[in-house]
Length: 341
Image 1 (cartoon, rainbow, N blue to C red):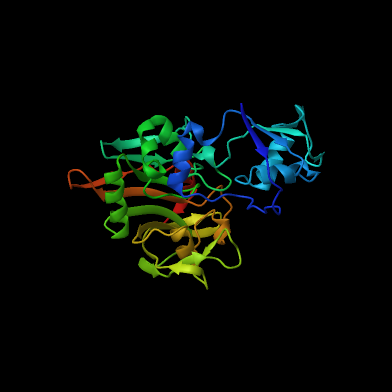
Image 2 (image 1 turned 90 degrees about the horizontal axis):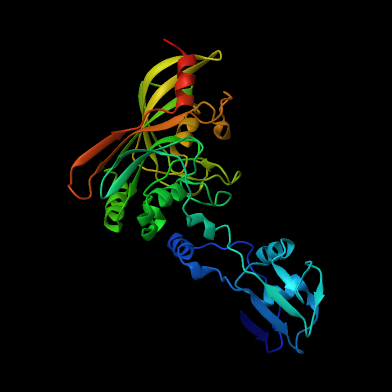
């Protein structure tokens, strides 16, 4: 059991950020390093120089590497004691008191732990894995989704991916978009595949159900950035930090659903911005069915978007590869309800 003593007069109270932001590689190293969170409790005996104050404020000075919010949560959940008795946040502590803190793993550090997550593997080699991401599965951990993601499932099924940044993930799909993703199994393969994304030699084709009847074919070339009014949205109208974005689309079929005209589209990406197809189609007056975030009037469970085809150059052989992912059942069911012309 480690013991620490506060030997000097306390400095001004530190105001810490409520949430840490770490580089993804640092997070991965923390998750696979058992020493990232101390298994032994921290014991602090407050000396005569310490000014009496609220427990949470004192502990924040003793353990400045943690946010005040996190420490308050530990106190509320019983992981902090004073004189071996669980204590409340507002308890006043001072000289002579002994505070014991049992450090707890942060939600972020849990983000890179293996979990048994269901997903389909379309094909795999020594350099890559192609998966068909199901609807509702988050690709990579982030705020509000620190576990239960595709990354967690990859680490469970392929433990060696723990040695690769982001567990080999090269690109992402939105939570409610299904379809093909490629995962790198080595650092060399990951670099090779990322460069293919950057030079636009990786091909990605989608099936989308859009509102209204589009032109036979077209290209939307509009930079995309964060919406200045709604933080969870992306936008082409006065966006924050816009980046180039190009989407090509082709009308496959038109029909009627719920007394509204709809279009079945094939979309091809040149770039890969967040919500790109969703934002671009909404910007030309054809939001995807179910995509209420971008103005859809058709209330189905999710945006009707599926990454059906993925093509890339094999990092080992140099061959051009292409894979298809079957359309998710809910989208197939909806397509069966449309009266096609």
